[in-house]
Image (tube, rainbow over all chains, first blue to last red; front, side, top):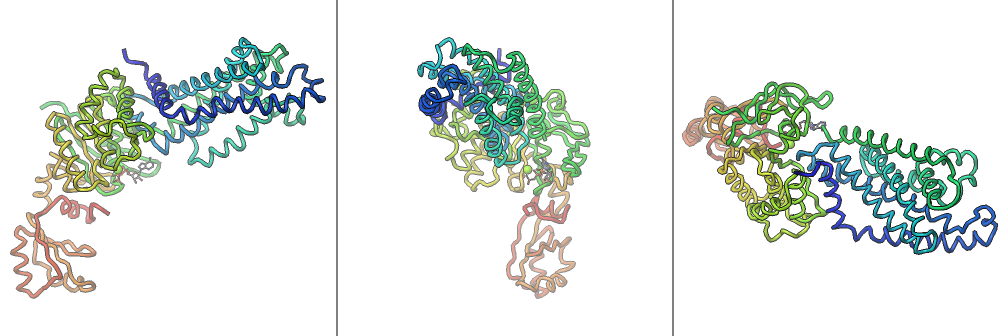
Length: 258
Length: 308
Ligand SMILES: Nc1ncnc2c1ncn2[C@@H]1O[C@H](COP(=O)(O)OP(=O)(O)OP(=O)(O)O)[C@@H](O)[C@H]1O
Ligand SMILES: [Mg+2]
């Protein structure tokens, strides 16, 4: 029995990764270490000993780590759903090559999203282990934060794939990171509660998928109340996954089937 | 007679307002090498892509191996091999990995793919490059690898879109030899090309396309017999004098074709024409007498050259 077509695309992702993982290993292992060191331990000391402890009621490192896990899932997903998709469509045209085989656009999109989600899982588990090693959370707490991180990654993988499928060239990709991913990273409650922000940004932050990912990761890993109803967050992220996938299918078909 | 492998009736492809393929009719039969010859933009690739079930038909009738590309795309693609005009190898991966992944896309088991890769690398003369990355390979090697990739599923029919464009003569001849072997094994070939020598060498039958339409169809020899004379005399005149000379060669041959840089005189005996020319005192800068080719057929039918 041959594997379902989309799984063949997942396998392709894994084979490419086997060749290229060295390039991403630094970001997978080193980035969490660096962030947790600089922000969690370094900045955390300042926060915990200053006035911040009054607001937080838990060590800053512990507050930060689960949120950073969600943010890392977002970055991994956005990275894997942007440049490699552009390469498949335009630079290397590997998607066109795949479409000359029995595979169709649907297999390509589902296979690609499936592979990105697997990558996000891997990165999240590594991250959870590092955050446990830092003493930010217990191992169980760290693991509890992995599923919402996955959901966050899937939401971004689908949305960014859809976005990339419509781009003429790579300038749109740097725009995405400069004006999309980086501001989200900074203002979605990863580093500080969004209630600290001016009202209008706070309201904008509620609308971002990353905020809901952070809220879920933090609420599940730590014994503090969720920032919003967790079921609302789950539903919201699932809606992003569904809408993103639907648009990705539509835009990829428009782009690749001529 | 067996049923045709490809059957097209009033086949049309439009991109917005542009009609790339305009109501063409043709049939490709099992075991033959069928060519599409035509200048840039004639609609060759658009036609190939419809046959390969990757590009939807705008209107008209198309059957590939008896199947409808709109409904049975995956099955058709599973039984075809495609060598696209544009390179789309995965340059990050090795020669071996490119073939393996492609085989997996066809749903073949790894063991079978590994067996075939051994044979295909031999066929493409790439055995030594098995584990090298694709990126640094020469143009000819990449082209051979794309052909090998197109054969991983042992297709009944191989579609090649300009397989030798950009290759040096030696690489072209090697490819021609490989294609000839495939044909002997019974693989049906569909080839597009700008090169009339390639079409003459490889194709049993061909169509000449221009501006989305088929302007002629037949075997290379029949096309030449039907649309051209046996021989051609090519004359070049010193710069600036061609116009004046043209008046003096009129009526000398069955037909004359005036190109920007030379004059072609069509007759059944070019040497005899050259003799008459000399007797009239017309002395060109250079003369070449040769047999008619498909280029002449194309020129006759469209008034334009194949390679622009
Ligand atoms: N995806 C597309 N979108 C819009 N127009 C297209 C597209 N593909 C091809 N065309 C147009 O259709 C016409 C036929 O193109 P096609 O590629 O089929 O020609 P061709 O005979 O293969 O030419 P060449 O020898 O240059 O490869 C051209 O005018 C081309 O610009
Ligand atoms: Mg073409």
